[in-house]
Image (tube, rainbow, N blue to C red):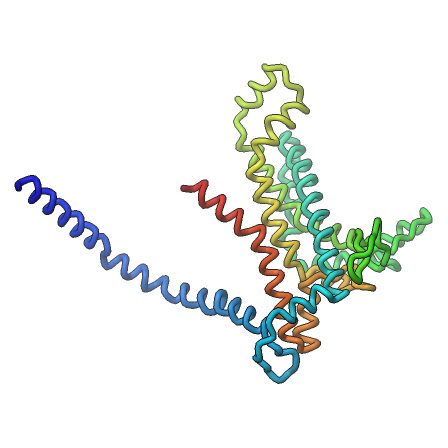
Length: 321
């Protein structure tokens, strides 16, 4: 009996302790956080839900029409020549953009990690483009790559006259629905501008990762007979894998929803060779008044971004646990 009473008393004490954990400080914390949670609930998740609801309606005129349309707007988009071109452009833009940002970022980080003279100057030069908005970058590179101005004035002296973002050529193309599926030459111009701006971020990430690798690890590899190339390929690169994953996720998030750079630099382009879902959504919704179609594009963009972000967040959460 005494054992049972002691166990009951200890259980009651545990319950009392659990109840005592919620103090006035906790309630004040909840009170201060409540407005943020409420705004997040309304202006993020509420609007996402509203966009999804509109995408399933017939609201494609100035007058709202919320009658249920099912997946009609989504079916229309995937059969639409322009949206097919948008998906093609986004695919190749994302691959080229992420690949070049990683390669150039790693290369520059390795060079700066050699502790060269004037490192801070070079580091600031490489970081400077990140201080600009994509709109400014788009306007600058639109002028630089204009067929009649900028870089082309210099290239003309060598008999070279590239069309840059006005080129409608599709490399290695094959027919996909109504669209020729291949790499649009014009997309390279947009990739150059995007890589110029975001390489500084990749450089900062990789430079921090290189500086975090202990010198003992490098010395141990050298003592085992590893060359500098083997040291970089078999020791340093594997240690930088978490940074590479982070860079890929962040750059993919930027590339899949990019709008301002392309809209300021090229717009949709001739034959939609530089068009992306963000530009199509803007013109469809706010110029064509096809609100349901625009909402469907927005939901598709959200899902494509979630494909990259959600697994990364789940993996990060499991790693923390």
